Amino acid sequence: MRVFVALTVPESVQTAIAGFVAKLRRSTDTARWARLEGLHVTLKFIGEVPPEKIATITASFAQIPFHNPIEINFRNVGFFPNKKRPIVFWAGIEACPELAALAEAVDASLEPLGIAREQKTFAPHLTLARFKPMRGTPKLDTLLNAIAAATPFEFGSAIAKEFHLYQSVLKPGGAEYTRLATFGCATGDPR
Image (cartoon, rainbow, N blue to C red; front, side, top):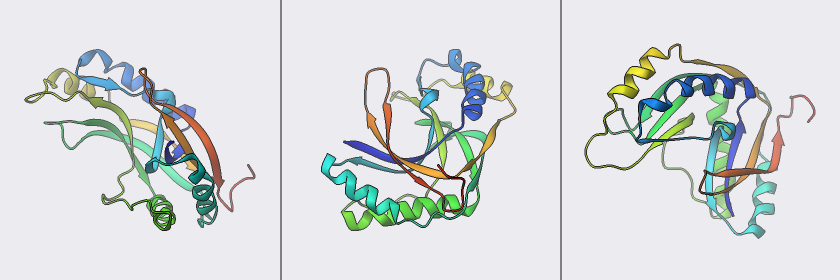
């Protein structure tokens, strides 16, 4: 099973981002746009694990101290690694330090199970598009102009009171996600 850990993105934020992306879609033919109904804030991509390991992973997440809701603001856009050689076009996430701490706790809980820790610094974002590999620098002037005209880059906010373990199934039309388990905030509202 291919699995990852993430926070959900509220429908209001998805709608705001969908309106923004609609202004950009025709400006480039080198981007593969994400399915916006599947937007999520990835805390940890685990990858392929045997189905029998899911119960152990779930038990390890149940031990994570997640006491306070996390406020998240969705704003700004950018490219990884940069706009000259883009691989990913993203919407930014600003959050209190507890978001990074939760990602670290998820990562640490998986290490004893033989799942390697992240080597990169946690950089929360929403992937809006991926760029097809190509020789040379893609022609992005039209896209960059469309992005500049589509301001403001404010997509809304959310209060995260739970995180989820998801299964990802790759399909020709894009990945399909199934929620396997939910882990709640101790001081949040009952689920």
